[in-house]
Image 1: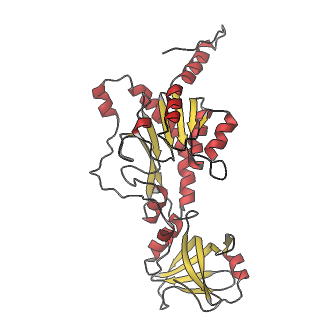
Image 2: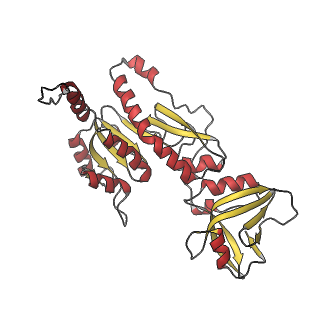
Image 3: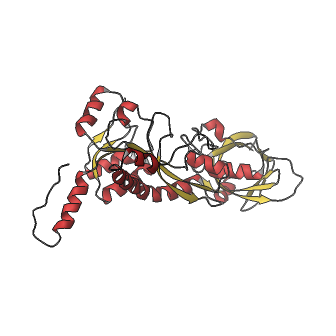
Amino acid sequence: MNLFFTKTQDKNSEFKLQINYMKKFPKIIFIGSDKFSVSSLKELYIKKYNIVGIITNPDNKKYNPVKIYSLEKKITLLQPKKLLDPIFIKKIKIINADLYIVVSFKFLPKKIWNLPKLGTINLHPSLLPKYRGAAPINWVIINGENRTGLTVFFVEEKIDCGKIILQKEIKIEDNETAGELQEKLQYYSGSIIISSINKILKNKNFSNERKKMYYIKNDDKIHTKNAPKIYTKDCRIKWSLSIDTIYNKIRGLSPSPSAWTLLYLNKKFYRFKIFFVKKEKKIHNYSIGLVFINLYNMFISVKEGFINILECQIEGKKKMNIKKFINGIKIKKNLFVK
């Protein structure tokens, strides 16, 4: 390994040498695409890790957050239309990074993740092996979990199945939405990536036998729940289910892709998105799905009580708080959802 020496005679020379050493090794290619990715990328840049390249998705109408940050910091940027494009692969081979870091990106072919000598690591927002898949943040809340976390693991051929380097457990609050949980996970994402890099660098000098003991097995034998991609049809609310199930689904899909229902209003059905609610458990004799409105509140009757709507969006309008929605409708009787 070549070290870059700083020519200096002052008392801080040893410290300067250490900084230049860290900038030299490991050389990192960062791979990501969204706001969640940028949190880790920023932490690496601020801590002066040697980011020699960034890979992100091709442009789609506007630049994604990772591209914006890479342009701002003038870091080499690659946006391949096809990951197996020979020209793209040639470029990343020339860069010759020691480590690839993946956060919020599509699955990489082996021809790519197998290139760096220290491996390719991925940050996943769940406690693997639980919640493998594309939407773990949504599904942990939809399923009523009270804890989740972050996992950094080595990318291997099976999706989300590589050896685990580090994990951090995070508590889920009773009223937390998917958006709020994502922000909490983002806050810790950079630090767990850096801790994982340090663990890899320490472990690279150990014997093969010691390496096997140093990482956690991503065990298929443990009972797991999947976190598949969520489609629009999956977001429709079934009002016949329990109040807790409905409540968890709404907050687990908020703000995106968002839970929805059909609201009968002014003798017509409208697509009605629901973002924030409260639940009120109460015995009643009303039919399921009836809508009750007063000056400030909108309640929907369910099995064990009522769902109190706080923020919503009716078809053709912007997202709004419930008071503004109520003020905007003329007829407030004979409403229901289905």
